[in-house]
Image (cartoon, rainbow, N blue to C red; front, side, top):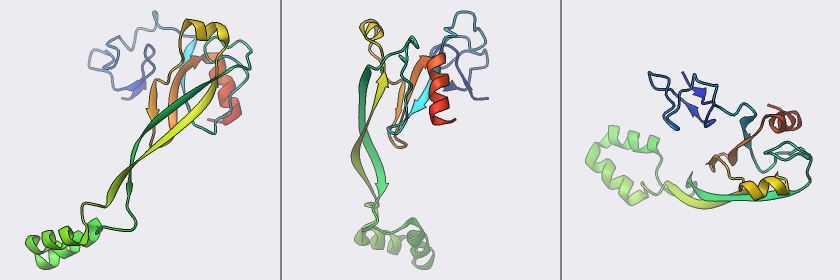
Length: 163
């Protein structure tokens, strides 16, 4: 069963002894975890409350977080579709299909391009001196970043953005 580890806030399938495969801590032992923290997913269009994401005190200061990565996308202009390849293989056999697909552009149906995303998340000056805010994970394909934040900040964030 997939659940969020109370220590590292990653969604994991615990090992048989309830150990988190990411942080190696017991997912059932919540006594030593920071109950004031939780994880949220944000995107470039997210609205943020005027509170620090770490301590939940009022602030108007923002920290810009930028991430980039490569995305595989389908090439609409060239290449033979997988459906066409299957039909050619059924009608003419593997050798003809291999020749046709190679000469008609099969294998060029996916290409990569670099994309970037950025968010400006609230963090007070005091908390920024203690630690740099960084996303726990980045999902560049869906343009989302996951941050570990104060629980009160997360509640305000969810009220602004919905669930």
